[in-house]
Length: 270
Image (cartoon, rainbow, N blue to C red):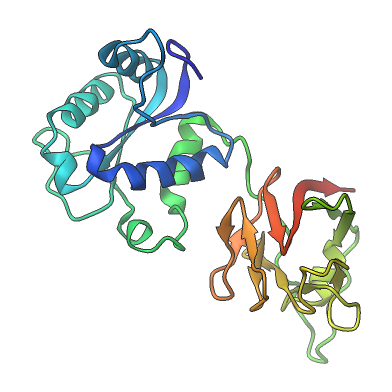
């Protein structure tokens, strides 16, 4: 977006925390929100007018607090401006004493997120942003595993909605499609294996970059999520690694990379 255009989110930060601001901006942008964070000047603009325009035109101002930001006069000015127009959402990436007058607002704790690149953005912050902005890409909800009777057989649930994943290989032109039926998840609450060969996987992607047992698709608390199974080439959601012990939620429009095949999550079919 150019100068003078409105944004959903303005991230206020000090230049020492630019890497953290860039990472957060990328994760929020991947969820469908427009984010202003890059302080590079546009042609014909002045630094002060560009920042002021973006700050005033953003629906919310997410202030990234750290000890360095707390000592930045510019971050404090931006926070005060946001507070005065009820657009202020504070987050904390390190233990920080906030400036006087700004400490009475609930602060989202991003310390674990900041310390570990594998850690997701906390749900508390995403919920706060969704309440203010609306969610452009809400999580795909899959039913939780159904209850079982004493004999261990799953109950039968009417209906069989499905999710489509449309994929293409890097540089090769091959296209792939995965249809994930909710009945499959109900029958296998431990998850569905995605892999290269049918004798090792529930969902087959016959590409040489895909391992025999590559990734696991599961329903977690009613959300569809994916994790890697120790594959050779990895599993990624919007360029974030989906690790074996750290599955990532899938949202409509997300790009899931399995080996050298990119899939787009297209949502529910009925």
